[in-house]
Image (cartoon, rainbow, N blue to C red; front, side):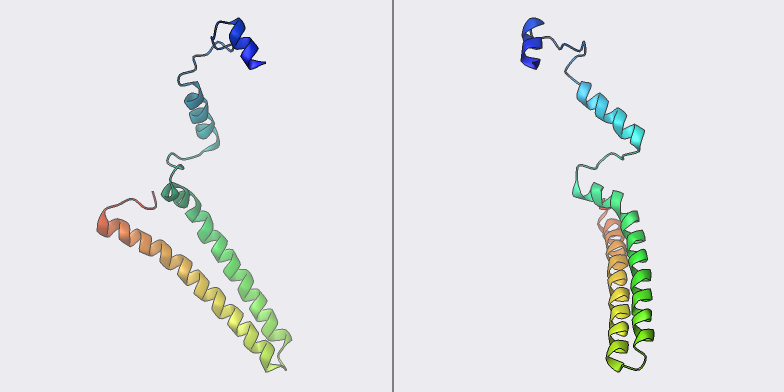
Amino acid sequence: MIGMLLAQNGGANPFGRSSGGATSEIMSTIEGAIGLKEGLDTPGGILSALLPYLLTFGGIILFLMFIWGGFEMLTGAAEPKSQEAGKQRMTAAVIGFVLLFASYWIAQLLQIVFGITILG
């Protein structure tokens, strides 16, 4: 169908727009309307955009793991094996959050020391 329209119009765009920068204009309009940032075409740009959400998500997971571990320790108060499992769950949650937080600060430190842009 598109081929027929192009053939009828002598190869001209049937929508009356120039085909040069129309796509980029539309994309920039859409990006501006929904609040997308520039630079999402690189891994660093994607990481920069996701990082605030990852830290928030990590905090929520930490909180849920603490509740789960505490519940596990309370329900298994008479059984040392269950208490130990709850302690291990809480320890693993803290270690995971510390690793997530440390990775952010290491990236910040690398930006300062080497003068490169990692996190946008």
